Length: 352
Ligand SMILES: Nc1ncnc2c1ncn2[C@@H]1O[C@H](COP(=O)(O)OP(=O)(O)OP(=O)(O)O)[C@@H](O)[C@H]1O
Ligand SMILES: [Mg+2]
Image (cartoon, rainbow, N blue to C red; front, top):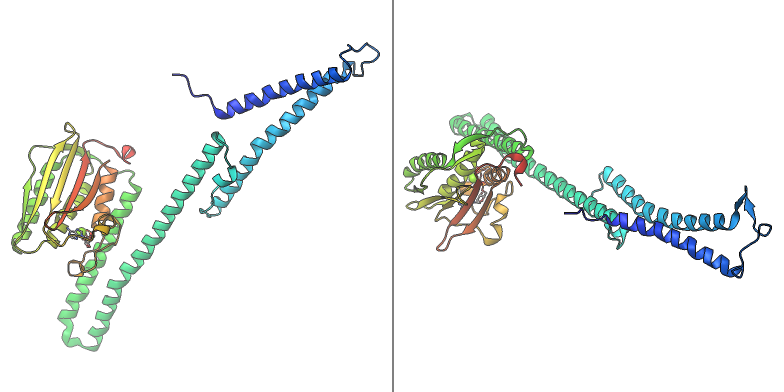
């Protein structure tokens, strides 16, 4: 297939062709002016022996088109430069496309790409800022409780045991929070993740078995239906954390006497594993089905089962770096259904 002719190339070609045409038109106008009489040797003014009229006409025509061309090319480039300078100063709300106007060529495409890059950087910076704010807030709460417990311990040594338990719980919480934040950070960088061949179905069965063992003590259960094998090139630890968090969430929110159902099916001719985890818990408000995958978003009223609030954010990132997806839906009859899709062999570079 022939490459698409460049639109800028077309414009430049047209400009040069117009310059030639202009020379011809000016020559015709000149001939008309002198009454179409061929000038004789004496009538003809010369510059260093070269007849002046064609020189003058050619020079004038190319000056006019060069001026037009220079203005046409340098004006948008000046706008792009201005925009890039502002972005270099950290002003990512700058947009250059409105300044470029209605032109349709590679320069307009470049302006569009620069604006898109600025919008993405702005979004990234905003989300980082928000995350930093949330992290400080999340770290402060257990720290405040720790300080309060230490203060109480000083005032009333008779409560030592209860307060030490509290201090231990809060420091464990801080430890878990920092550990999960580090995992999320590692996933955000996503480079250098070790991949190994893992039978994900076997992994799921081990997770379900552990969860079932813990669930029995509280009158809940975990049922798994995952036939066959699904060997994928993944980072085993991260995939394990993703599935484990979803299963543990389901268990955490399940009322006693109910079962968590884990169902895994190999699809797409063995290239994809679709796992659903269903529970009969309270579910989440419909408008929060997407938001629960953001860091530190928790549904109001789930304070009793409060965790760090990063489990689903880690699960989503873990699925994304493996070219997979995760989503949540409300279950008919009550409860939440989380679906995880995992590809068999996507390396980091291919992940979306
Ligand atoms: N199966 C579920 N049923 C009802 N609500 C859920 C369920 N799974 C998640 N949620 C809601 O989504 C929120 C986020 O879940 P996520 O796993 O990210 O955090 P967490 O479980 O609170 O903490 P952790 O980081 O320890 O996992 C939960 O706090 C809860 O409000
Ligand atoms: Mg969780």
